[in-house]
Length: 433
Ligand code: FES
Ligand SMILES: [Fe+2]
Image 1 (cartoon, rainbow, N blue to C red):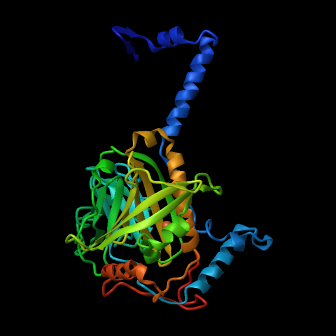
Image 2 (tube, rainbow, N blue to C red):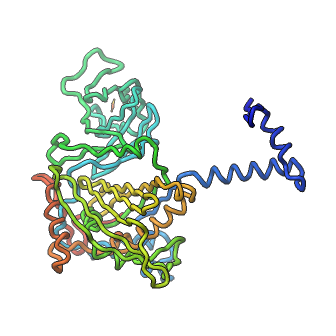
């Protein structure tokens, strides 16, 4: 039984409720109202999750007409548009680096998941020790998919087809249920995996090289000190480089993100945002895989400029797949941990986890803060889903950071990073989804 401590007294919570019930309310109704309030408050404080599919943003003009009413026809129309917008050779589809593939909560103890990223079919499992393993999904015996019916025993994964077990430590075949012999070379191809900040990461390298750097640990996220407002996942139809390059494209900030949208559709035109680039550093401080950009953000209400104390926004890109944005608002911070994980050459899974350390913002619903972020992001996705990738864009001198960015990003491609060629009809490698 739960008891309340009020001053020197220890009392039963029901007694407390009955004693404190307002005189104009019957005590039963008071308990119901209190219960509803507590349920509502609990819901209000929960992180908000949203998922947006590839076809949902940027295709209104095509799909608005009567002739594209059904889902099937809509996808056909979008596929036709996609095939015609990116003819020619693109940069390699899959850069080398760490990529987020799952949230930690997706994989319970001894849980198994199939994962399809960077054109690979993978299986992820959590051993009895809590450690996460990532391997090629196909059993080297007769090719069963280990992520479909595979079971975890200790640190091993057991194939659903004939019950062979593979040890996650290095992928070796540990047990064949009906034979004493262990065939030489029977081994599961393992990938480097790590888990931090509440996410599971996988290392991809076209040459099969070992990791040369690790994803950063953000102690405030890792420890749960910052409140998670929510996670937004959006599938985007463009080349991976276009999304990351956007983080260093200061010129687009004032053009695309110049006002607020709180709820979908309604722009708060009276509340203007204006951005100024302060500095860009690419691969400095001995960490060639890290790039930083800092901007100042000014806000105006009905045309009058005001700046909240020390409103700076810093972008830190770590490798090709991890972005960390901090909005320092003076009275607190909003932090966006963003990830990009290529699924196919022109299909990227993007994720934004939004946190805050501000006591004021912590009082707001996570859904509200996430909604502001999601509406700004939607503006970017509307452009990405329809843009083409230009190998030689025409830039002005103020955009020299973009040129430097492309040079910096090229470090994530290596000899065997495969380029993708799309012909005008898309026949060699259709962009269909
Ligand atoms: S296919 Fe996996 S044990 Fe036979
Ligand atoms: Fe943007």
